[in-house]
Amino acid sequence: MDYRSLIRDIPDFPKEGILFRDITPLLADGEAYRTAIRQLGEQAKAWGAEVIVGPEARGYVVGAPLSYALGVGFVPVRKRGKLPAQTVSVTYDLEYGRDILEIHTDAIRPGQKVVLADDLLATGGTMAATMELVRKLGGEVVGAAFFIELSALNGRSKLDDIPVCTLVKYED
Ligand SMILES: O=P(O)(O)OC[C@H]1O[C@H](OP(=O)(O)OP(=O)(O)O)[C@H](O)[C@@H]1O
Ligand SMILES: Nc1ncnc2[nH]cnc12
Image (tube, rainbow, N blue to C red; front, side, top):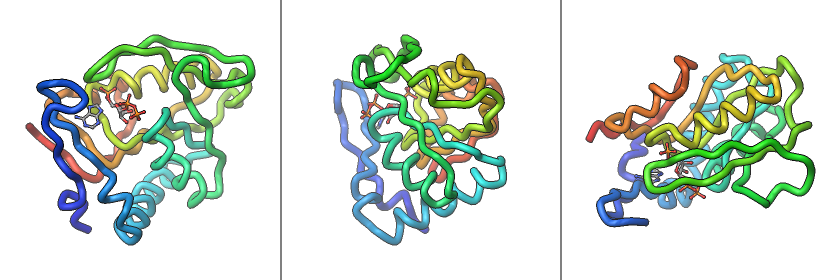
């Protein structure tokens, strides 16, 4: 599948100097979207995923269908103040900002095998924070799945050598 042709480059969004990799054309193509989820799903299954965890908001368009395809649960990680029950939090940096992420304290069972999912790995700040939240609850992170990796930003280095699967890599 030629995913690259379905990812649109938008210069200077959301800030000057950022080349935004927009996945909305890929999501709008039913066959490409389903193939992408199936591909990541095979990997997540091989890692032994018992639950999928994804960060708001684009992590949901990857994580939720992935969990549905595997028949396992989906746990949302949200930006501050959005989750209604008791949470744990972590502050994090991403390519173009800083924020707080939260997860419900009862969302993961200790020892549960967790696969993290998001649309894109840039600096790794978002996924490192998501991994920290899962570990605070005693979950075992067994892998991380993305549509896109921006290799030059070296996000993998923040992910403690957990296995990473990406469908499209941009080297620049
Ligand atoms: O590797 P990083 O440098 O952390 O960047 C990657 C993160 O940035 C984007 O999310 P964003 O915070 O823009 O939120 P959104 O999904 O709500 O658009 C993207 O969906 C990843 O979650
Ligand atoms: N360059 C980029 N394009 C799309 N989403 C991003 N999240 C962080 N960096 C990004």
